[in-house]
Image 1 (cartoon, rainbow, N blue to C red):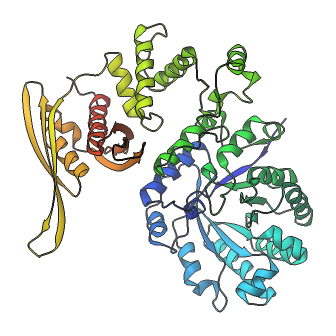
Image 2: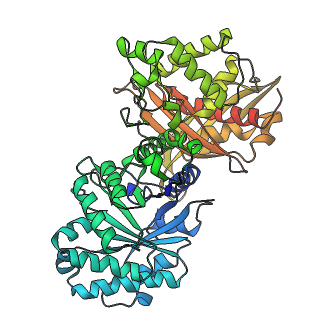
Image 3: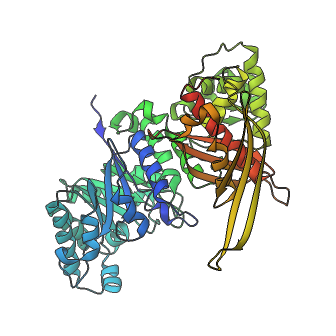
Length: 532
C-alpha cells in the first residue's frame, strides 16, 4: 500500500530564537541547519532577513543544504506601500532562500485593533504579498496567524484570508494556533472543515505548546487533512514553546496509524539521528538535556532495579514502547553492568573501533567511563574525547607529546593610549620525543592564550595543526560553591570543514579548558595519521 507524503518544516532558528534565554549566533544557526538537513527535514527556516544583524548575516552566506529547502520568514506588506516598495518585504524577497514563508493576519479582531485597516485591505495585502514571492521564483508559504481564534470568531473571514493566499499561488497554507490554546478535538474539526472548503489547498499546521498539547494538536491536524507540520527541535519557542519535532518525528515513523498511512523525508536510518540532533542543540545552548524528554531524553529508556529491570532484560517490549536504538537513544539498566557493556560496545562501533566483547580491556574501559561520568565528564557531545579515551584503553593512541607544565597570567593595565585593557599570556612547556619546547602565547583571554601557546611549536607535528581552528567554547558549572566543578566543551574544525568536540573537567576552569584543548589536538593528529 502506497503511503502519503508528510512534509516537515523546522522553525528552530526563528521560533526557537524567541525562547527566553536563547540567543543563536550565526555559527550556531549554521550547525543546527546542517544537522536538520542531515536528519531529513524538508524545510529549514533560517530566520527573518532584515529583522536583525544575525539573521541578515546568516542569509548572506547561506548554509550548504543538500536536500532541505532554505526558507526565509517575513510578514505580508504593510498598509500604505505596494509590495514592490515595502522595505521589510524586500529584505525577505532578496534573501538567498529557496522558499519564503509570509505571516499574515486572519483574525478579524487583529485586523480591526492591531492593523487598524479595512478587513478587505488585509485580504488584498495577503494576495499581493504572496504574488510577489511567486514573481521572484521562490516557493511561497503562508502562515495564517491566529487562524483558529479567527475561525471561531468569524469563519468566513478567516477562510477569505487563506483563500486569497492560495489563489495567489501559496504552495502551503499553514494554519497557526498562535495562542496555543486550541484543543486537539477542535483542531481536528476546524482543519477538516477547511479541507472541505478549500479542497485544492495544501494545508499545514503550526502549533504552540501553551496547553502541553502541541504534538497532539499537530497529529490531530494531520488526521484532519494537514500535510505539513511545523515545529522546533526540543520544542523550543516563545512562552511554552512549539510542537516538538523530536517527539513528532518518531511518532510519525514508528506509531500506527501514522507509520502505515504516511511517509516523511526522514528515513529509518536518519531517524536514528534524532537523539544526537536533540543533544547537539542542548550543547549549543550550553544546557543539560531534559532527562525525561520523550524518545530522546537520557532517562527515556532508563530502568531502575527490581521488577522493571528484570522484565526488560527478558523482553524489552514489557517497558519500552519502541526500541531505543531506533531513535539513536540507549537503554539504561541502572544496576546492570551487562547493559552498560552493551552501550559501550555500541559506542565503540560508532567510532569505528572493532573489539571483542569479551576483551578484559572493555570491562576496564566501562568502569573508567562510569567513574569519569560520575566526576562530571559527558561524552554525548564530545565524541572525540570518548574515542581518544577508548583508544588509549585499547593501546591504539600514540603518545604524541607530553605537557610538562603550563602557566597563565592575566594582566589588566593601561595601554599607550591610556585605555584600560586586559592581556593574557600563557607559557607551556611541552615535550615532543626527545625535544622540549617552551612556547609563549598571547590572547584576549586565558584559554585563547593557552591555545596559541600550545600550538605554537609542537615540533614534528606542527604542520598537522596549520588548519586547526577553535570555533566554539562552552563552560558549565556542575556544582555550586567556591570549589565548583567545571566542565568545558571545546569544538574545533579543520580546513576541510570537519568538526569534532572534546571535554575537560576540573575544579579549575583553566585546567578543564587545557584538557579539552590537548584532546582536540591529539584527536586531529591521530585522525590525520600522524606517527609517534
